[in-house]
Length: 269
Ligand code: DGL
Image 1 (cartoon, rainbow, N blue to C red):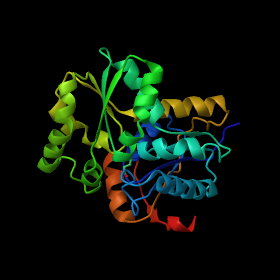
Image 2 (cartoon, rainbow, N blue to C red; image 1 turned 90 degrees about the horizontal axis):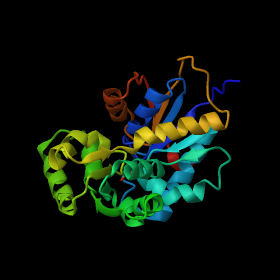
Image 3 (cartoon, protein in one colour; image 1 turned 90 degrees about the vertical axis):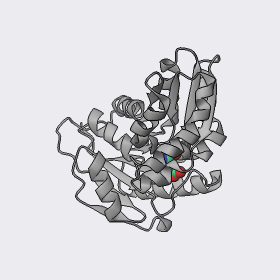
């Protein structure tokens, strides 16, 4: 029996849309309920406790909408909250870090892997932990890029300021002979072209979104939760602030038209 319930996906802002895009491409029969916590972003500079509190509120909101599975489309919340909240929900819940680390470990030939992410993600050491589990010989070099998220949220994707910041953040990593760079924040794939200008053509850029969507598809099939393949989906978008701005951005990157985005007060959940 097809399960028509939606998938709940969330992030601190627009970054999780890079994961939504992959889910729409790979599993087009599934409906998505997205929440972007635009009022409280960035998560990357918040404490672990705060990110866990935010994550619990968002999960309560999405569960109230009847979702059948959850995707934490945020590296920071995956790093800080996934282990805790997965014990608290009775539906499948996946993050983006484990899938991203898996691809990076498979991609690197010389074992020198760079990871860029928020302060929270880099300081948590979670990529190093997962990468070392996959291959104990890898060397992981992390770099926090705190200004990337506000630059993306402001739409400065293709701007000289962003290019200059990318140069400052990433040049250091190039000293370590990395052959793979993990875009360890869901906002960063939106800066792919800019980052490419700094790293050149020889370094592989890993976007965890693709493998996350694959993992989700596998979990849905394993648990018998998949919808039928009829492409009649009903996606819904919610944010905690700035619905119109979010809608415009979503329409510039998603393969479907976002007709409406609603503001909600997430503190009520
Ligand atoms: N996009 C998120 C991540 O993957 C969070 C960015 C932020 O709010 O700092 O970490």
